[in-house]
Image 1 (cartoon, rainbow, N blue to C red):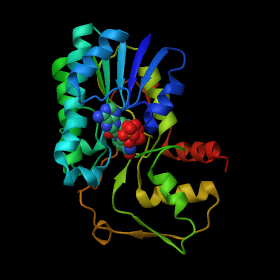
Image 2: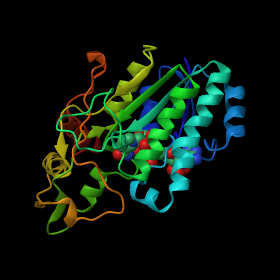
Image 3: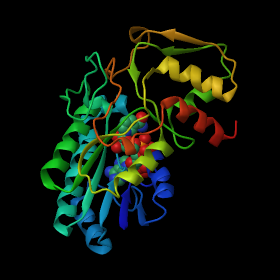
Length: 275
Ligand SMILES: NC(=O)c1ccc[n+]([C@@H]2O[C@H](COP(=O)([O-])OP(=O)(O)OC[C@H]3O[C@@H](n4cnc5c(N)ncnc54)[C@H](OP(=O)(O)O)[C@@H]3O)[C@@H](O)[C@H]2O)c1
């Protein structure tokens, strides 16, 4: 299959480049293809004629989106809309990556694909608008919601925790729960999903649930870091954007494409870092 991969230099883009190696992948970073530019998107589609576009381009600065909603909506909503219009015109399928932050976290159980959305912050609203555009303009779509991504590349929670290990102690929020996801596990799941033509909405995230505190402790354990980790509450760690309190992702879709447990992701992360 010929696959055009947008946002190819992001943490998921890099992992997908490896996971999709059996296909003919054309990687486009933000300099080569700006997804907010409809004419550029149309020109890229006409030049490449891919069977599938996988959109990893995104505005991922959750707090920064509060200060620049227009910027976030341009990348996260207009971008997918442009890709949906252009893929439909060329008869290509489209895979859009989305987020657990489309949910408000007020549930008492993990969210499945068919639960009602209600984002709490600009980032979640912009990603939900992107999902809606993809569903509206290209019926051959996959919307893959994932959560709490970390990998050995780019900027993410796990690498930040590692860089804080020199401190006397590290304070981490213990009252927000989600599904930590090691990016290569997600990339492998997406590589399996795109073989299926099982279009629709999918939750692909590390199995199980954890707080940021649980994740930090597991990471330090796996990396052999002895720095004490102290639990703190969300009000003790104020941020510009509200976060869902409890938004682990569950799935009612095919069991073959479930990702490994989040603890396995932590082990593989430590192994891949060479710890
Ligand atoms: N990170 C998480 O914890 C998390 C959680 C849930 C869902 N997700 C979703 O997962 C997906 C992948 O996230 P990630 O962690 O891989 O993000 P990332 O590392 O921040 O990568 C995003 C990429 O998008 C590119 N980009 C930004 N604006 C663009 C534009 N206008 N045109 C083309 N490319 C553009 C960036 O390029 P530059 O570097 O050149 O700006 C960057 O390479 C996103 O859809 C995100 O919303 C992420």
